[in-house]
Length: 266
Length: 341
Image (tube, rainbow over all chains, first blue to last red; front, side):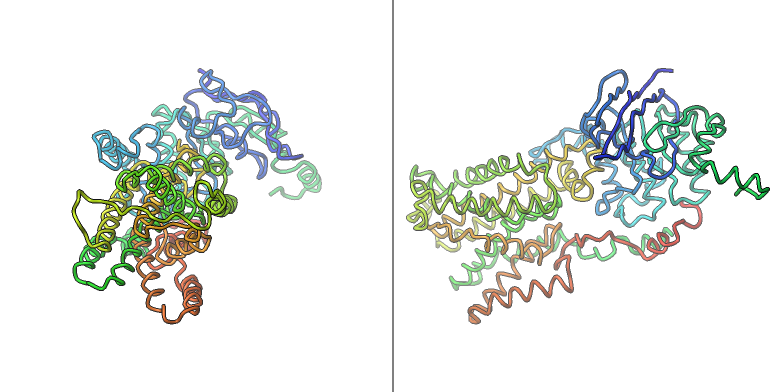
């Protein structure tokens, strides 16, 4: 499998805090990679680094063999790196369809004069954005809500809309930051199916998530991050058996002590 | 779930569904003002109303649609005015050429100003525009060789219109009327286009906009320049209308006046600036007899408005996400009940 995205010991320091510290990893083309780790481990910062939102303190990022270190986020989006956000960042006062249409910004070119005069180029651009936008909305099941303001959607649907918006970029890699947060089990199952479908359609996915069942069932490979460093990497089974991972999640002392006393470990 | 959402599709946005039609009606009524009313003083006031519609709408492009807070619109207004005054008195350029030229001059200055401000957000941007507006005025006040300083520039020729004679007031009224219509038409189209979507996406969340490929700094610059262009055009008309220009017309008071009309009328809608300009201008004219208490009344009005209707008379932004009751409940519960589809 070809490597699509590679980070070479990338770091991000905020003053003395090493939010991300020399993480090297690879994302293979066509896989679903999970990133897990305790709260504050640096997972979201890691996403912000590979999408260009933050500048690296040091290290290198390669996308499809190309050096993309410290490119601005809009360039990263142009390359086909799409993302969603942990705290949903929809355009609340834009309609559902308009939210998706913003995703076609790069693929359309019409300028100020085109817009004022409604030239052929403008009409083609709008037709493309409308048509493809509705197609995506149908895919995520939000076609009936196209004219609603995005901020009026219920929470679970907002998450879906955020993914829909990212899909408008026709991404090669999709970074999902806690997509299942706040969802009930049936919605989570639906989401998992949806991500698998996207993956079969050729989109490489990287997922940050706390829901272990979700991650274990969905991902081909998992990377564990703790205190800004990569702790472990491997298949779901390998990772769950890794003593370092267990320690990071449950702590060391308490579990052992309790076992000795014969108490139950929760 | 679906029914609740559909029942309440735009939570308090009902008025805006008819926005286009309301604007057409208002503009149609405004068209007849000089034909029906012969009192020159009233036509004069209505001319100013139109001038302010252009100015406030131009500010609204920045404050209402790209989410920045510009408090120095008088700066661009001033640049347009002085460009027109200087070029017409010194080089005899005609009014019709100066209309676009003044706009472009203001837009160019805004691009220069964008170099430091495009990356600024919130308060920092506001402070820069505040300073800028004052710098422009001071420049006009002190660069006496070019602007004749505090004495101002007088003797601005009246514009000819293919040799046809006209009653002066009605002429400017209709010039401004056409400019207002053209501006509203263009702005409406731009806002609905890819560019307008980019502006509004920046207003809602610039990080998300950038993640979707919107060049945030570039589109803020375009937004700022578009706004400055129309303020510059308004400046040009003002100069030919008054046939005199001095730095006194472009104080911070003027900036805040434009801002207040926008805030009271409503930001983020095309209708807001129109309503704001009409209301404020007419109210301040009506209370002209109250002399210095007029401004007191004006301030009181602003405070009351902010208290009872912070989004303005017909604004879209009240800076709070629209929320259905159900959604609030769900947020509290943290989970959505039942499968969603």
